Length: 129
Image (cartoon, rainbow, N blue to C red; front, side, top):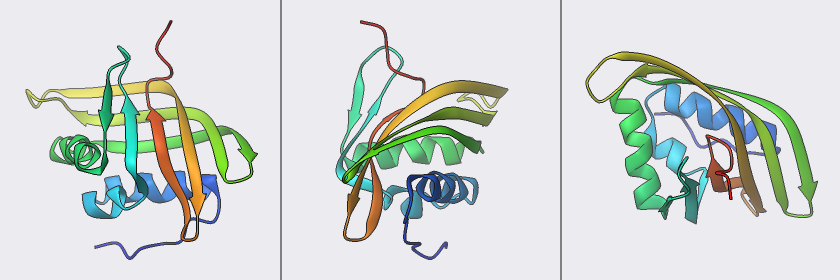
């Protein structure tokens, strides 16, 4: 299991999160999220709370997904950061068929006493309207 790693910068958090998923360490990945975190789906529906986030991340690991996060822009205001970049996923789908996906992502991070944490993740970008 990966040891907890302080996340001093948003870029470090992105790298630590991808490393945890790639190592199959769902619990380590979930610890990088706030308790009331949210994932925004492409259609605008949301997955809310750490247990729901954990289930979504477990699906990635169960499908042998490899993740790469390329951070392109970081905007920090106090203890809040908006991070934009590209997310690349390679793995299998529910039918165990290979897939590769690349999308523009937008993530909101919150800084606390233990470093940065993911609060809102829109891995496919923000939905229209």
